[in-house]
Amino acid sequence: MGKMISFSSALTFLLLCYQERESSLTLAFSHPSSLTSKSILGTATTATASTNTPLRSQPTRKKHDSRLWNEFRSNDVMEGKASPMIVNGDGHSPKISDGKKTDETAASQADSSSMDPSQTSSLLAQESSVSPDSNKDFKDPTNNAKSNKPPFPIVLWRFTRPHTLIGSAIAIPSIFLLASPTYSSFFTLSSLQSLAYAVFPSLLMNLYITGLNQITDVEIDKINKPELVIAKGDLGKGTAIGIVLVALLASLIMSVTHPLYSTAGLQVALWGSFLLGTMYSLPPFRMKRHPLLAAFCIVAVRGTIINAGFYSHALSSAFGKSMGVMNCLKNDWKCSLSSLFFGVFGIVIALMKDVPDAHGDRIFNIKSFTVRVGQTKVFRTMKNLLTILFGVFGAALMQWAFMAPNLFVGARRGLVGCLCWLAGWSTRKEAKGVDAEDSVEVYDYYMHLWKLFYLSYLVLPFAK
Image 1 (cartoon, rainbow, N blue to C red):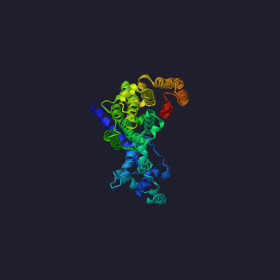
Image 2: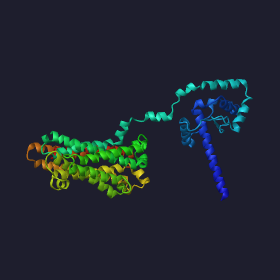
Image 3: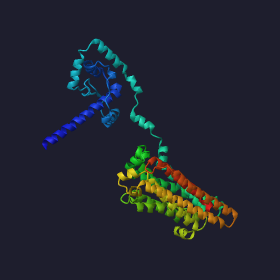
Image 4: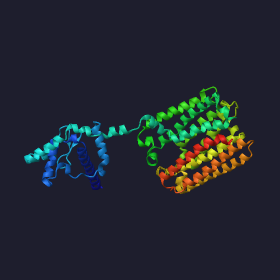
């Protein structure tokens, strides 16, 4: 056993020495200013003794074995945490820039004194060509990374997950128009003020929910969505936490402080989204790990909380008709049917989102529906469910068009019904040829569903 330990220790030491040797070689050739006449003369000794190959034509070593070590060492040198290493002629005896010499360095320099004068002058000429001025052509990788980093406003915009932010920005005005007694009543000053007071905190709450999900899924996102700003390194985790906390506090404060616009409906929408969004992402609840609980969160937020909450808020604050959230769901067919439609649509979007994320979810033991039943089955089921949803609501709207009190209302409902059928056809058409196990193809299809989601909210007010 003792011999095995000694052997493993020796092997570990040799591997470390090999990495040190590789890193020193790479650093010396990547930093011309670190070469001195002594190091060049030492290198020439080896070159003369073997093939008399010029210094620059010496074969370069492969870097993949010590790439991480080289990057670590190079960064330390550039930040002043370590001294640059200078390679001797034998290629594995580093010299530290503080003036201390190893025995092998001294030996190689002693051998260099026996070189031919013509060779010495040639090598010194090569050294003179590597002047300090050549450093101006050397680009610091650290500075390059900083210069390539997008400006903070762009990083913040990407952090918000813009497609979800746009969805919320379209949904709330559409719900207000749906709740308005007439279209003209929507364009009054009190209605627009109430709308603005609802939109701003809801966008902040959307930022909190999507931001929290990114903060808690950094390691998963490095596999599934490496382009996200935290996973990519464009936004620090501490900064992200500060952003979501400020957004959360501002949203919740606005929901309770205004005497007129802080209605029960707005409080249900914001506080309900906060609680379920937190439980969805944050331990110890982390409902996203459990398919049924995750589906409940999605239906509750996308269906009941957003649609019924802002519908109740619109009636109470803008149109002078006080009605609670549950009362709207039970007694107002416009509220109940829109909540049902977007609740089902929300399930489709959420489960379709998990299809391209299956690989990372398996690694981190996220038991989503996709991980449990397979990407192909979930993809096909969600495609068919959304097609049926559009088909059923399109048929219902066509029937209501014939029951309309006048031709104008009938034409509106009929047009929306036709658009529903068109959206159902688009759902199936865009799915053709999509490989459910190809993350890029599925993500493109997923973003197409978001476009249909926007369109559905845009035409919603014309269905009443």
